[in-house]
Image (spheres, rainbow, N blue to C red):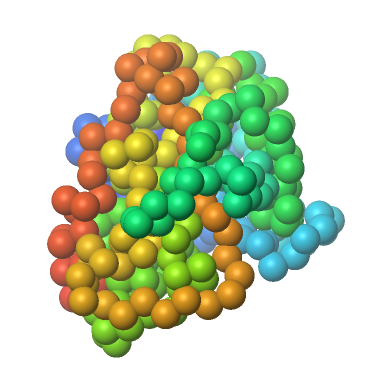
Length: 294
């Protein structure tokens, strides 16, 4: 594939770029290049087969939708720009989205309490009702609707995406690793009982490849790490350091995890990377400050 990867300098973008360049021609496009300067002529001249859009501005701090903001400009109107330049084209569009379009899903009655942490009584599939609780989730949901206008688009929603590298931008994996190895103790809401299902960026790349190769479009797909990667935050920090002292604090959610069966049914995709096996490399890269830039 000839790919334009929008957001290639972000955390997930760096990891996805590392994966894709092994077998594809990838043109990176980030805020320095400006999503609005991407044109149909450029796509045609470079014989682009697919656009992967990771462009986003995190706006979790605001509950209400805010017009005329950087978030709307990049996340929403940026998607609208892509829809315009892709009109009547055969170029595939992979719009990356988030679990936050579903809002807060799990309560105490929706989980099972185990010695390892909470475990879900159900997993969130694509038919679950939307209920975003912040501007970030709302803006990503609007971008999803915009991308539907292109017949060769797919929406891929992520829970926790991660790479092998240091992360100085966002997420919870790097901060928890750093605090655990640097202090030997860590404070977690609910004592870290809440669960997650992290997805490695290589598995995300494989999903994109399989959808493209099988000519599957017009789909909304929930992509998490699967039940083999489901673990509580408490379990995670204990994998980093079995002797870490976990201090419980108030607040926090009960967890989140996707039902990923749709992707398997469509193209036979399932995650191959286990977080437990990748963690030693992640820890090493964090200690060495390796952010994945060649």
